[in-house]
Image (cartoon, rainbow, N blue to C red; front, side):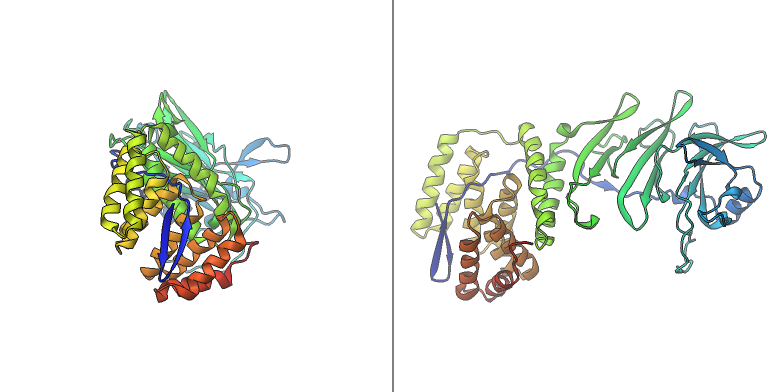
Length: 444
């Protein structure tokens, strides 16, 4: 049991929270920003000349589902009107096979292509979504189709062009999207292998990391988690892919530090940010739990002596009840060292730091608590109090929302938040609690 003292009143809760005070991960957690292929984009005038020569081809999907190559100049919209290909066909030039002759990537765009510094207009789009990005190879006659993108959508765009697999050749990351929404964004990687251009499709967004700092990039691929809200609120699951045997293969269990240090904290932050949307919060719970299993399976948190941990934790509680917070903190930290798998000790440690007014440190421990149990109501309550004291009212209100949402009895939880809004010694806590009490809707 632990006491939560706010002014002259006491709330007692049973705490079962997990410690994740492992050593910092040794992998490189730096994300490498995508370059958008800027250096490989064919300039406007040169692009126009290539299109005007009439020797380029793009793949069109017909009604039977099969495709054929057509001259871009033949593109028409659904009404049969000729399309201005200068505005709706983009071109990138990349030497994929190292022969010093650049292959051309023709990208169809549903929306007009705007050059840098060109003003945006309300010009509506042409309906050319049934065309796919096409790779062309230079020949004596001009250019011949070499490969068609497996993915298609309303528009195509370049995500990145760089040597991802350290073979000395550039690789091409292509993305496609669907209109104003990115629900259907898909990524395809093109690369050269044994005389042919190959490709691999990833079903959602891709980010670049080099976890091993070996010059070969791992791909962090995110998938929508299933909410029905706008895509900004989606709860994404992330898979990690590494280059192996001439292709990318999934290898989540190999990089648990990524889930521990980046993925889980990000999802907890989103649970605070979107606390007024139930699906955006609750959909993240099983994803955090799934990520935590990867962390635990890795062996980062091995139990040294669970019984000694219990003894130290009891000593900490006894010290806390006697008003000796500093002594209690020492015992709680020892308990966490002995038994990092015991969920009670982390929250107790965070609470001791909170009583000592070390709020930033306390919040770190509460975040660690929520990593192992994102639906633990009391951790949200404690985190909310610290957030409020540090001047983060909106975040504190979100934490209190989640406290009410995950509490065993919503009515009792709302009563506790109302009590907090009236009697806490901190004005900031009172105001955040009041906002949560008045704003929370059980059907959020």
